[in-house]
Length: 243
Image: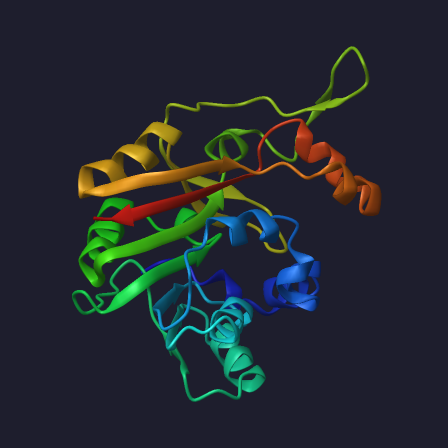
């Protein structure tokens, strides 16, 4: 079973105060880039893996999706999503992505935001998603960029120009990585960029787009602390298609 850090009271309290949880999708700097990767949503059947508070699920329905089925390991997340949603076309379920099984050809879009790096058996998950998509369906997901995860964050140093740098440690050594983020010992799984993409290709997906998110000048002007994201990619956005 995956680590359920989101039901840790201290973690959940801190996480709930992040701008992307207070302001929803508009509080996530990468949201415009994600939106550009999404297919037409009218009449689409959507599965949201790691649905959190349900922000994306509700947006999908606003864009015309016929149904959204959201999954999250955290009871806290699911309770909040249900409380904030008044739509019979959206259903939320507690589920572990390590063992989740979806019916075959049941969805036109599988979406996931910043969740897959918590999953140990990525290959099993991708095979299951491929089977769950109808022909012509799409997978769009975001994860922590492998370079970011392999960096020794938050132990940055200063270069000769006084800029922060994040040394990359053991990039080719895949597996468990632990970090302190709102709570100690948050467990994630590092995979190289090649492993991530080759798993998709080997499963039968056609890659459509890969983005290494960086904030725009306008975003940095509004939120100056985003400037440090120009030093190394923090997030990777992927769009893949089932033929």
